[in-house]
Image 1 (tube, helix red, strand yellow):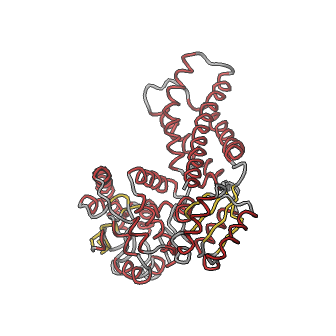
Image 2: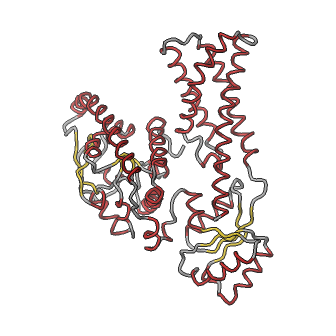
Image 3: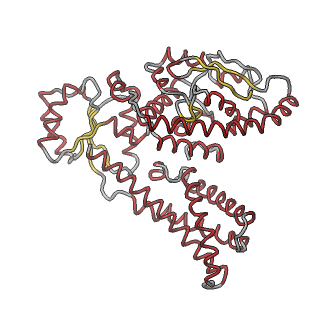
Length: 464
Protein backbone atom coordinates (compact mmCIF):
# COMPACT_ATOMS: atom_id res chain seq x y z
CA UNK A 1 0.00 0.00 0.00
CA UNK A 2 2.95 2.31 0.63
CA UNK A 3 4.01 1.91 -2.97
CA UNK A 4 0.57 2.74 -4.31
CA UNK A 5 0.58 5.99 -2.33
CA UNK A 6 4.04 6.85 -3.62
CA UNK A 7 3.05 6.15 -7.20
CA UNK A 8 -0.07 8.34 -6.92
CA UNK A 9 1.84 11.15 -5.24
CA UNK A 10 4.52 11.00 -7.91
CA UNK A 11 1.91 11.42 -10.62
CA UNK A 12 0.32 14.35 -8.81
CA UNK A 13 3.75 15.96 -8.43
CA UNK A 14 4.40 15.57 -12.16
CA UNK A 15 1.01 17.02 -13.09
CA UNK A 16 1.53 19.90 -10.65
CA UNK A 17 4.91 20.58 -12.22
CA UNK A 18 3.32 20.49 -15.67
CA UNK A 19 0.63 22.98 -14.61
CA UNK A 20 3.11 25.43 -13.09
CA UNK A 21 5.39 25.08 -16.11
CA UNK A 22 2.55 25.96 -18.49
CA UNK A 23 1.74 29.04 -16.43
CA UNK A 24 5.39 30.13 -16.48
CA UNK A 25 5.52 29.58 -20.25
CA UNK A 26 2.41 31.72 -20.75
CA UNK A 27 3.94 34.54 -18.69
CA UNK A 28 7.37 34.25 -20.33
CA UNK A 29 5.79 34.27 -23.80
CA UNK A 30 3.93 37.47 -22.92
CA UNK A 31 7.17 39.13 -21.79
CA UNK A 32 8.92 38.20 -25.06
CA UNK A 33 5.88 39.38 -27.04
CA UNK A 34 5.96 42.82 -25.39
CA UNK A 35 9.70 43.14 -25.95
CA UNK A 36 9.33 42.34 -29.66
CA UNK A 37 6.12 44.31 -30.15
CA UNK A 38 7.47 47.55 -28.67
CA UNK A 39 11.17 47.12 -29.45
CA UNK A 40 12.13 47.11 -25.78
CA UNK A 41 10.57 47.41 -22.35
CA UNK A 42 7.18 49.17 -22.73
CA UNK A 43 5.97 51.82 -20.33
CA UNK A 44 4.07 51.01 -17.14
CA UNK A 45 0.64 51.84 -18.57
CA UNK A 46 1.03 49.38 -21.45
CA UNK A 47 2.35 46.65 -19.15
CA UNK A 48 -0.58 47.15 -16.77
CA UNK A 49 -3.10 46.89 -19.63
CA UNK A 50 -1.58 43.65 -20.97
CA UNK A 51 -1.16 42.03 -17.57
CA UNK A 52 -4.77 42.82 -16.63
CA UNK A 53 -6.15 41.31 -19.83
CA UNK A 54 -3.82 38.32 -20.09
CA UNK A 55 -4.10 37.29 -16.43
CA UNK A 56 -7.76 36.44 -17.06
CA UNK A 57 -6.85 34.72 -20.31
CA UNK A 58 -4.18 32.59 -18.63
CA UNK A 59 -6.77 31.12 -16.25
CA UNK A 60 -9.15 30.42 -19.14
CA UNK A 61 -6.34 28.91 -21.21
CA UNK A 62 -5.30 26.57 -18.39
CA UNK A 63 -8.91 25.41 -18.12
CA UNK A 64 -8.98 24.78 -21.88
CA UNK A 65 -5.71 22.84 -21.58
CA UNK A 66 -7.34 20.69 -18.91
CA UNK A 67 -10.46 20.12 -21.00
CA UNK A 68 -8.27 19.17 -23.96
CA UNK A 69 -6.66 16.44 -21.86
CA UNK A 70 -3.27 18.11 -21.54
CA UNK A 71 -3.18 17.36 -17.81
CA UNK A 72 -4.29 13.76 -18.14
CA UNK A 73 -2.22 10.75 -17.11
CA UNK A 74 -1.60 9.87 -20.77
CA UNK A 75 0.39 13.08 -21.19
CA UNK A 76 2.91 11.82 -18.64
CA UNK A 77 3.36 8.55 -20.49
CA UNK A 78 2.87 9.12 -24.22
CA UNK A 79 3.97 12.02 -26.38
CA UNK A 80 3.11 11.04 -29.96
CA UNK A 81 -0.25 12.86 -30.03
CA UNK A 82 0.72 15.79 -27.82
CA UNK A 83 2.10 18.18 -30.52
CA UNK A 84 -1.09 18.24 -32.61
CA UNK A 85 -3.25 18.61 -29.49
CA UNK A 86 -1.13 21.53 -28.27
CA UNK A 87 -1.31 23.16 -31.72
CA UNK A 88 -5.12 22.88 -31.94
CA UNK A 89 -5.61 23.93 -28.34
CA UNK A 90 -3.36 26.97 -28.44
CA UNK A 91 -4.90 28.19 -31.70
CA UNK A 92 -8.29 27.84 -30.02
CA UNK A 93 -6.94 29.83 -27.06
CA UNK A 94 -5.75 32.62 -29.37
CA UNK A 95 -9.23 32.75 -30.96
CA UNK A 96 -10.70 33.15 -27.47
CA UNK A 97 -8.23 35.97 -26.81
CA UNK A 98 -9.16 37.67 -30.09
CA UNK A 99 -12.85 37.53 -29.20
CA UNK A 100 -12.08 39.04 -25.80
CA UNK A 101 -9.92 41.85 -27.18
CA UNK A 102 -12.23 42.77 -30.04
CA UNK A 103 -15.58 42.60 -28.25
CA UNK A 104 -14.95 43.14 -24.54
CA UNK A 105 -15.18 46.82 -23.53
CA UNK A 106 -12.45 48.64 -21.66
CA UNK A 107 -9.38 46.76 -22.99
CA UNK A 108 -7.04 49.44 -24.19
CA UNK A 109 -4.55 47.42 -26.25
CA UNK A 110 -4.15 46.79 -29.97
CA UNK A 111 -4.31 42.99 -30.21
CA UNK A 112 -3.76 42.06 -33.86
CA UNK A 113 0.03 42.25 -34.03
CA UNK A 114 0.48 41.20 -30.40
CA UNK A 115 -1.66 38.07 -30.81
CA UNK A 116 0.18 37.01 -33.95
CA UNK A 117 3.53 37.38 -32.19
CA UNK A 118 2.25 35.69 -29.05
CA UNK A 119 0.86 32.72 -30.99
CA UNK A 120 4.27 31.97 -32.55
CA UNK A 121 6.27 32.51 -29.36
CA UNK A 122 3.89 30.59 -27.08
CA UNK A 123 3.75 27.62 -29.45
CA UNK A 124 7.54 27.42 -29.61
CA UNK A 125 7.87 27.74 -25.83
CA UNK A 126 5.09 25.25 -25.06
CA UNK A 127 6.56 22.70 -27.48
CA UNK A 128 10.02 23.10 -25.95
CA UNK A 129 8.67 22.85 -22.39
CA UNK A 130 6.33 19.91 -22.93
CA UNK A 131 8.33 17.82 -25.38
CA UNK A 132 11.87 18.40 -24.17
CA UNK A 133 12.21 20.00 -20.72
CA UNK A 134 9.30 18.36 -18.85
CA UNK A 135 10.05 14.76 -19.96
CA UNK A 136 13.59 15.13 -18.64
CA UNK A 137 12.43 16.54 -15.30
CA UNK A 138 9.65 13.99 -14.71
CA UNK A 139 11.28 10.78 -15.91
CA UNK A 140 12.10 8.36 -13.06
CA UNK A 141 15.83 8.17 -12.36
CA UNK A 142 15.68 4.51 -11.32
CA UNK A 143 12.83 2.06 -11.95
CA UNK A 144 11.96 -0.18 -9.04
CA UNK A 145 12.34 -3.91 -9.74
CA UNK A 146 9.07 -5.73 -9.10
CA UNK A 147 7.57 -9.21 -9.13
CA UNK A 148 3.94 -9.99 -9.88
CA UNK A 149 2.03 -12.97 -8.51
CA UNK A 150 -1.11 -13.46 -10.60
CA UNK A 151 -2.51 -14.72 -13.87
CA UNK A 152 -5.11 -13.84 -16.48
CA UNK A 153 -5.45 -11.47 -19.46
CA UNK A 154 -5.50 -8.36 -17.25
CA UNK A 155 -2.23 -9.43 -15.61
CA UNK A 156 -0.60 -9.81 -19.03
CA UNK A 157 -2.03 -6.47 -20.18
CA UNK A 158 -0.76 -4.76 -17.03
CA UNK A 159 2.77 -6.16 -17.27
CA UNK A 160 3.05 -5.25 -20.96
CA UNK A 161 1.83 -1.70 -20.34
CA UNK A 162 4.25 -1.05 -17.46
CA UNK A 163 7.33 -2.75 -18.92
CA UNK A 164 7.12 -1.14 -22.35
CA UNK A 165 6.97 2.39 -20.97
CA UNK A 166 10.04 3.60 -19.04
CA UNK A 167 8.07 6.50 -17.58
CA UNK A 168 6.46 4.17 -15.04
CA UNK A 169 8.50 4.06 -11.82
CA UNK A 170 8.73 0.25 -11.83
CA UNK A 171 9.37 -2.73 -14.10
CA UNK A 172 8.45 -6.36 -13.66
CA UNK A 173 11.44 -8.67 -13.74
CA UNK A 174 9.47 -11.69 -12.51
CA UNK A 175 5.88 -12.82 -13.18
CA UNK A 176 4.70 -15.99 -11.45
CA UNK A 177 1.37 -17.80 -11.81
CA UNK A 178 -0.09 -18.66 -8.37
CA UNK A 179 -1.09 -22.12 -9.62
CA UNK A 180 2.58 -23.04 -10.16
CA UNK A 181 3.62 -22.23 -6.59
CA UNK A 182 3.33 -24.63 -3.68
CA UNK A 183 3.39 -23.34 -0.13
CA UNK A 184 6.13 -25.81 0.84
CA UNK A 185 8.31 -24.52 -2.01
CA UNK A 186 7.78 -20.85 -1.28
CA UNK A 187 11.32 -20.46 0.05
CA UNK A 188 12.65 -21.10 -3.47
CA UNK A 189 10.43 -18.30 -4.79
CA UNK A 190 11.71 -15.97 -2.05
CA UNK A 191 15.30 -16.81 -3.01
CA UNK A 192 14.55 -15.95 -6.65
CA UNK A 193 13.21 -12.57 -5.53
CA UNK A 194 16.52 -11.89 -3.78
CA UNK A 195 18.58 -13.01 -6.78
CA UNK A 196 16.65 -10.70 -9.11
CA UNK A 197 16.91 -7.80 -6.66
CA UNK A 198 13.15 -7.44 -6.38
CA UNK A 199 11.95 -4.81 -3.90
CA UNK A 200 8.21 -4.79 -4.64
CA UNK A 201 5.83 -7.77 -4.72
CA UNK A 202 2.52 -7.13 -6.49
CA UNK A 203 -0.08 -9.78 -5.63
CA UNK A 204 -3.50 -10.55 -7.06
CA UNK A 205 -4.91 -11.36 -3.64
CA UNK A 206 -8.42 -11.93 -5.07
CA UNK A 207 -7.35 -14.90 -7.20
CA UNK A 208 -8.56 -18.16 -5.69
CA UNK A 209 -5.22 -19.93 -6.15
CA UNK A 210 -3.38 -17.09 -4.42
CA UNK A 211 -5.25 -17.25 -1.14
CA UNK A 212 -3.39 -20.29 0.14
CA UNK A 213 -0.13 -18.38 -0.41
CA UNK A 214 -1.16 -15.24 1.45
CA UNK A 215 0.24 -16.35 4.87
CA UNK A 216 3.65 -16.99 3.28
CA UNK A 217 3.52 -13.68 1.40
CA UNK A 218 2.56 -11.92 4.64
CA UNK A 219 5.52 -13.42 6.50
CA UNK A 220 7.87 -12.50 3.66
CA UNK A 221 6.83 -8.85 3.32
CA UNK A 222 6.54 -8.25 7.09
CA UNK A 223 9.70 -10.01 8.28
CA UNK A 224 11.99 -8.89 5.45
CA UNK A 225 12.35 -5.12 5.03
CA UNK A 226 13.70 -5.56 1.52
CA UNK A 227 10.20 -6.25 0.16
CA UNK A 228 7.14 -4.06 -0.09
CA UNK A 229 3.66 -5.37 -0.86
CA UNK A 230 1.14 -3.86 -3.33
CA UNK A 231 -2.31 -5.04 -4.35
CA UNK A 232 -2.64 -5.81 -8.06
CA UNK A 233 -6.22 -4.58 -8.32
CA UNK A 234 -5.35 -1.14 -6.97
CA UNK A 235 -2.30 -0.76 -9.18
CA UNK A 236 -4.33 -1.88 -12.21
CA UNK A 237 -6.89 0.82 -11.46
CA UNK A 238 -4.08 3.35 -11.00
CA UNK A 239 -2.66 2.56 -14.45
CA UNK A 240 -5.83 2.01 -16.53
CA UNK A 241 -8.53 3.95 -14.60
CA UNK A 242 -10.78 0.90 -14.76
CA UNK A 243 -11.19 -2.32 -12.79
CA UNK A 244 -9.78 -5.73 -13.89
CA UNK A 245 -13.14 -7.14 -14.93
CA UNK A 246 -12.34 -10.83 -15.39
CA UNK A 247 -10.81 -11.01 -11.89
CA UNK A 248 -13.89 -9.77 -10.05
CA UNK A 249 -15.88 -11.97 -7.68
CA UNK A 250 -18.95 -11.31 -5.57
CA UNK A 251 -16.82 -10.42 -2.56
CA UNK A 252 -15.33 -7.53 -4.57
CA UNK A 253 -18.80 -6.15 -5.22
CA UNK A 254 -19.74 -6.51 -1.57
CA UNK A 255 -16.67 -4.49 -0.56
CA UNK A 256 -16.69 -1.86 -3.32
CA UNK A 257 -20.08 -1.51 -5.02
CA UNK A 258 -22.03 -0.41 -1.97
CA UNK A 259 -24.20 2.62 -1.51
CA UNK A 260 -23.19 4.38 1.71
CA UNK A 261 -25.48 7.26 2.53
CA UNK A 262 -23.79 10.52 1.55
CA UNK A 263 -26.31 13.33 1.78
CA UNK A 264 -23.84 16.04 0.76
CA UNK A 265 -22.82 14.25 -2.46
CA UNK A 266 -26.42 13.31 -3.27
CA UNK A 267 -27.65 16.89 -2.70
CA UNK A 268 -24.80 18.43 -4.72
CA UNK A 269 -25.26 15.98 -7.59
CA UNK A 270 -29.01 16.59 -7.72
CA UNK A 271 -28.55 20.38 -7.65
CA UNK A 272 -26.05 20.21 -10.52
CA UNK A 273 -28.38 17.88 -12.43
CA UNK A 274 -31.27 20.34 -12.13
CA UNK A 275 -29.13 23.31 -13.15
CA UNK A 276 -27.70 21.43 -16.12
CA UNK A 277 -31.12 20.15 -17.18
CA UNK A 278 -32.54 23.69 -17.18
CA UNK A 279 -29.73 24.86 -19.47
CA UNK A 280 -30.30 21.86 -21.75
CA UNK A 281 -34.03 22.59 -21.74
CA UNK A 282 -33.47 26.20 -22.80
CA UNK A 283 -31.19 25.10 -25.66
CA UNK A 284 -33.72 22.46 -26.71
CA UNK A 285 -36.50 25.04 -26.89
CA UNK A 286 -34.31 27.40 -28.95
CA UNK A 287 -33.20 24.85 -31.57
CA UNK A 288 -36.48 22.91 -31.91
CA UNK A 289 -38.10 25.22 -34.55
CA UNK A 290 -34.97 25.14 -36.74
CA UNK A 291 -34.67 21.35 -36.46
CA UNK A 292 -38.35 20.93 -37.31
CA UNK A 293 -37.89 22.90 -40.54
CA UNK A 294 -34.70 21.02 -41.49
CA UNK A 295 -36.29 17.63 -40.82
CA UNK A 296 -39.38 18.53 -42.86
CA UNK A 297 -37.11 19.50 -45.77
CA UNK A 298 -35.24 16.20 -45.44
CA UNK A 299 -38.32 13.99 -45.35
CA UNK A 300 -41.15 12.62 -43.22
CA UNK A 301 -40.76 11.42 -39.65
CA UNK A 302 -41.23 12.64 -36.09
CA UNK A 303 -39.08 15.37 -34.56
CA UNK A 304 -38.77 13.57 -31.21
CA UNK A 305 -38.58 9.88 -30.35
CA UNK A 306 -39.14 8.03 -27.09
CA UNK A 307 -37.03 4.95 -26.40
CA UNK A 308 -37.50 2.26 -23.77
CA UNK A 309 -34.23 2.22 -21.83
CA UNK A 310 -33.05 0.77 -18.54
CA UNK A 311 -32.90 3.10 -15.55
CA UNK A 312 -31.67 2.70 -11.97
CA UNK A 313 -32.14 -0.84 -10.64
CA UNK A 314 -33.01 -1.97 -14.18
CA UNK A 315 -36.41 -0.23 -14.17
CA UNK A 316 -37.74 0.61 -17.64
CA UNK A 317 -37.91 4.34 -18.40
CA UNK A 318 -38.95 6.40 -21.43
CA UNK A 319 -35.98 8.38 -22.72
CA UNK A 320 -36.55 11.30 -25.09
CA UNK A 321 -34.27 12.30 -27.97
CA UNK A 322 -34.29 14.21 -31.22
CA UNK A 323 -34.72 11.65 -34.00
CA UNK A 324 -31.39 10.98 -35.73
CA UNK A 325 -32.24 7.75 -37.62
CA UNK A 326 -34.90 7.18 -40.23
CA UNK A 327 -37.02 5.05 -37.88
CA UNK A 328 -37.29 4.54 -34.13
CA UNK A 329 -36.63 1.02 -32.88
CA UNK A 330 -36.44 1.18 -29.09
CA UNK A 331 -36.72 -2.59 -28.69
CA UNK A 332 -33.62 -3.36 -30.74
CA UNK A 333 -31.18 -6.01 -29.53
CA UNK A 334 -28.65 -4.99 -32.19
CA UNK A 335 -25.50 -2.88 -32.10
CA UNK A 336 -25.68 0.57 -33.69
CA UNK A 337 -23.53 -0.51 -36.64
CA UNK A 338 -25.91 -3.42 -37.31
CA UNK A 339 -28.98 -1.22 -37.02
CA UNK A 340 -27.63 1.46 -39.37
CA UNK A 341 -27.61 -1.02 -42.26
CA UNK A 342 -31.42 -1.09 -42.30
CA UNK A 343 -32.15 2.09 -40.38
CA UNK A 344 -29.64 4.70 -41.60
CA UNK A 345 -28.74 7.94 -39.84
CA UNK A 346 -30.25 11.00 -41.53
CA UNK A 347 -28.19 14.01 -42.62
CA UNK A 348 -29.65 16.19 -39.87
CA UNK A 349 -29.26 13.29 -37.44
CA UNK A 350 -25.56 13.00 -38.25
CA UNK A 351 -25.00 16.63 -37.22
CA UNK A 352 -27.09 16.12 -34.08
CA UNK A 353 -25.07 13.07 -33.07
CA UNK A 354 -21.69 14.69 -33.67
CA UNK A 355 -22.70 17.66 -31.52
CA UNK A 356 -24.57 15.45 -28.98
CA UNK A 357 -27.61 17.71 -29.39
CA UNK A 358 -29.78 14.67 -30.07
CA UNK A 359 -29.49 13.87 -26.33
CA UNK A 360 -30.67 17.28 -25.06
CA UNK A 361 -34.41 16.42 -24.82
CA UNK A 362 -33.39 14.07 -22.00
CA UNK A 363 -33.45 17.14 -19.76
CA UNK A 364 -36.98 15.92 -19.05
CA UNK A 365 -35.67 12.61 -17.69
CA UNK A 366 -33.11 14.45 -15.55
CA UNK A 367 -35.70 16.82 -14.07
CA UNK A 368 -37.93 13.82 -13.30
CA UNK A 369 -35.04 12.21 -11.42
CA UNK A 370 -34.84 9.19 -13.75
CA UNK A 371 -31.39 10.11 -15.03
CA UNK A 372 -28.36 12.18 -14.07
CA UNK A 373 -25.95 14.28 -16.08
CA UNK A 374 -23.14 11.91 -15.03
CA UNK A 375 -23.42 8.14 -14.66
CA UNK A 376 -23.15 4.86 -16.59
CA UNK A 377 -24.77 5.29 -20.02
CA UNK A 378 -28.03 3.37 -20.17
CA UNK A 379 -28.90 0.87 -22.90
CA UNK A 380 -31.91 0.50 -25.12
CA UNK A 381 -33.97 -2.14 -23.34
CA UNK A 382 -33.55 -4.90 -25.91
CA UNK A 383 -29.78 -4.54 -26.16
CA UNK A 384 -29.45 -4.17 -22.39
CA UNK A 385 -31.27 -7.45 -21.78
CA UNK A 386 -29.07 -9.18 -24.36
CA UNK A 387 -25.89 -7.92 -22.70
CA UNK A 388 -27.13 -8.98 -19.25
CA UNK A 389 -27.57 -12.51 -20.61
CA UNK A 390 -24.01 -12.65 -21.93
CA UNK A 391 -21.97 -10.76 -19.32
CA UNK A 392 -21.75 -11.68 -15.63
CA UNK A 393 -22.49 -8.86 -13.17
CA UNK A 394 -23.70 -6.62 -16.03
CA UNK A 395 -26.80 -5.41 -14.21
CA UNK A 396 -24.69 -4.16 -11.29
CA UNK A 397 -24.00 -1.02 -13.35
CA UNK A 398 -27.63 0.00 -12.78
CA UNK A 399 -27.13 0.33 -9.03
CA UNK A 400 -26.81 4.10 -9.66
CA UNK A 401 -28.78 6.41 -11.94
CA UNK A 402 -27.72 6.28 -15.58
CA UNK A 403 -26.24 9.44 -17.06
CA UNK A 404 -26.01 11.37 -20.30
CA UNK A 405 -22.26 10.92 -20.13
CA UNK A 406 -19.93 8.92 -17.94
CA UNK A 407 -16.42 7.76 -17.15
CA UNK A 408 -16.47 5.18 -19.95
CA UNK A 409 -17.61 7.72 -22.53
CA UNK A 410 -14.65 10.05 -21.88
CA UNK A 411 -12.09 7.26 -21.32
CA UNK A 412 -12.71 4.44 -23.80
CA UNK A 413 -11.67 4.32 -27.43
CA UNK A 414 -13.88 2.39 -29.84
CA UNK A 415 -13.10 0.83 -33.19
CA UNK A 416 -13.89 2.49 -36.51
CA UNK A 417 -14.75 5.84 -34.95
CA UNK A 418 -17.84 4.58 -33.15
CA UNK A 419 -19.14 6.47 -30.12
CA UNK A 420 -20.43 3.42 -28.26
CA UNK A 421 -19.52 -0.28 -27.87
CA UNK A 422 -20.17 -2.43 -30.94
CA UNK A 423 -19.17 -5.83 -29.55
CA UNK A 424 -19.16 -7.89 -26.39
CA UNK A 425 -15.45 -7.24 -25.92
CA UNK A 426 -15.88 -3.48 -26.15
CA UNK A 427 -18.80 -3.70 -23.75
CA UNK A 428 -16.62 -5.57 -21.25
CA UNK A 429 -14.17 -2.67 -21.28
CA UNK A 430 -17.02 -0.18 -20.88
CA UNK A 431 -18.28 -2.21 -17.93
CA UNK A 432 -14.84 -2.07 -16.32
CA UNK A 433 -14.92 1.73 -16.57
CA UNK A 434 -18.50 1.82 -15.22
CA UNK A 435 -17.52 -0.19 -12.15
CA UNK A 436 -14.56 2.12 -11.60
CA UNK A 437 -16.93 5.10 -11.63
CA UNK A 438 -19.39 3.47 -9.24
CA UNK A 439 -16.58 2.62 -6.84
CA UNK A 440 -14.95 6.08 -6.92
CA UNK A 441 -17.93 8.33 -7.66
CA UNK A 442 -17.69 11.78 -6.10
CA UNK A 443 -18.37 15.41 -6.91
CA UNK A 444 -14.74 15.86 -7.99
CA UNK A 445 -14.90 12.90 -10.39
CA UNK A 446 -18.23 14.14 -11.78
CA UNK A 447 -16.64 17.53 -12.42
CA UNK A 448 -13.74 15.91 -14.30
CA UNK A 449 -16.19 13.92 -16.44
CA UNK A 450 -18.29 17.01 -17.14
CA UNK A 451 -15.32 19.11 -18.27
CA UNK A 452 -13.93 16.35 -20.47
CA UNK A 453 -17.38 15.81 -22.00
CA UNK A 454 -17.53 19.49 -22.98
CA UNK A 455 -14.06 19.08 -24.44
CA UNK A 456 -15.19 16.13 -26.55
CA UNK A 457 -18.20 18.06 -27.80
CA UNK A 458 -15.95 20.97 -28.82
CA UNK A 459 -12.88 19.16 -30.13
CA UNK A 460 -14.43 15.81 -31.11
CA UNK A 461 -11.25 13.89 -30.30
CA UNK A 462 -11.06 10.56 -28.57
CA UNK A 463 -9.08 10.42 -25.35
CA UNK A 464 -7.26 13.76 -25.71
